[in-house]
Image (cartoon, rainbow, N blue to C red; front, side):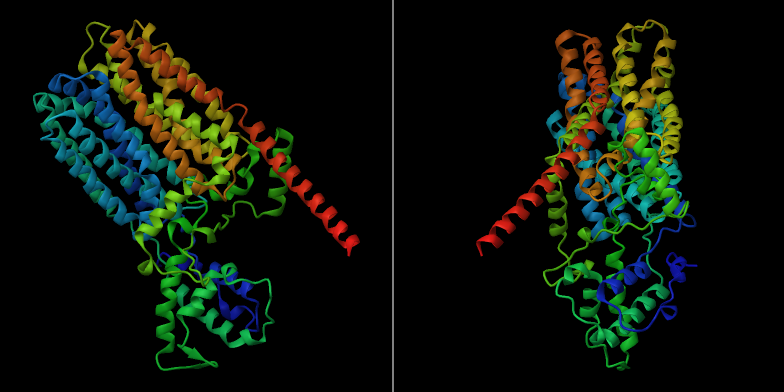
Length: 602
């Protein structure tokens, strides 16, 4: 069975062959042409590939800094802050490139983008080897390698949404566990390699590039999900049936081609290949060839509104905007949904906003589109006025910036506090980072469980986890025993895992599904800012004070604040929605009064 054959239950012959209005036909075409996630099969190879890519990307980002930054400080005779800027640019561009990477996935496919990303990142590390100064490393190690990592990470997450719906939470949970495994493995392996290369950071970069290019092999498994030949033929039959009967359908003055882009495009691209119910020579074959391109367009990654949602799609309706409800309202919402929807049935969420609709209302094919146009649209989405004008969304975005300020600091600088304890081996010092990785895996599995429980507020869980992680980070300078550091790993790991795993669920709770793609891109940008400024700020405080105590106080406080500031988000969002509703109602009353006055004047 091919990837698309599970849609075989759609049989046009079982549907009435009489005249149908265009919007009904559009809906039917979408149902038949949409490749529903198989929720298994080759999808588990996709999960394995995503797991390995996450293992490589996060394994490198979270672990190489503690080795390379001290080497750059001594090698280039620079400050801690200057050395930290290299790692921060790497992690920052990992986030910044997200919107562009999503646009590239839409044009070229997830596999091609991930393959290119692995090559770009590896080349960035190799170009860093002859770097004469730290400024060259900002470009090669930071910008180039960081952009490559972003191009590896985003496709690995997006493609899971194409292969999984009902089991998406499980699939995503397994895939992102690669981050924890990578952190655990490379935290220990890096020390061995560092000793093997005699603490030569340039040789260590060869090893880093080799680890990165291994992601190329994993990316080869990211096979795109395509419609079956059977689906394409059924779409062609529906179009032919519509063409034969459309003259009998009364025209609707309110109907626009922009309401039926899939049908309008199919009509345009199959024009001249059939006529009056009589097939011309080779018409069936030529129609199918034309239809195949439009079906491919319908199944582009960003055509799915839920592409960035990491939970099961069976819970999307139950989760949507529940962050603006109190406990009683949310319970009633869930009760109504369970009564009206078939339990455990994945829903289909297509977005016409992400289809490349031309001025004539038709869809432009992938081959006909401009790459720069898609990238331009992705960047335009970062300026979504509705989201940027929303106080609740901006508060959520700002909290992400503050969280990322602290996010990487313990991974890089916890070892400096461990130096206060005499007699610790290199392996014991590295074990703390490895433990964070192991606990991160367990916490992410727990977050997957929470994501599939609509009655549990993801926002509340996230806020508590971040506050506790921040407070724990602030206590690090007071630790005097090794077990203190091991205990710290528990709250910090949970905070990191909850932030990473529940972000899309929180967006769904507060904003809803319609704006999720735009919101995801904006949040990545805000998080990128935090990633860029966080580690250099911590290092600058060390340069000024002579130790990292103040750094952990401040960065821990920022993480705790990032959780605390989100506590009123639900109430704030509810106030926003009520204000909009009141404003619309007032405008409607004023318009009605104006109409009545005009009528009296006449």
